[in-house]
Length: 87
Image 1: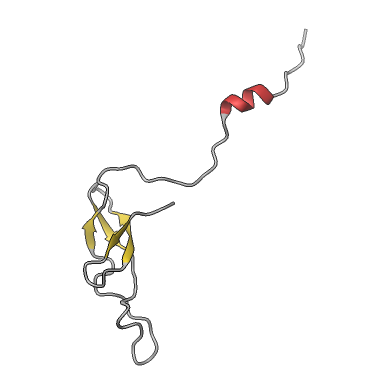
Image 2: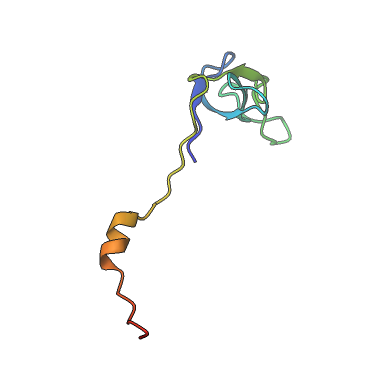
């Protein structure tokens, strides 16, 4: 599944946006780290303060796309073997 990306309002990084339940126009920014403050003094990663914030989706109301292979039913009908007659 490919999620749309928007520019983070704080750090300007392109960040994935997950759709928000009950809204066709809003989504949550995925958690991402701020390029200017990558780690705390103890070595832990630091998320951007805008992570998980609610933002506008770039394409309102558009159906999400999934990358899956769907077999062509017309080709299957042509290739399928014929069942022998029972009478």
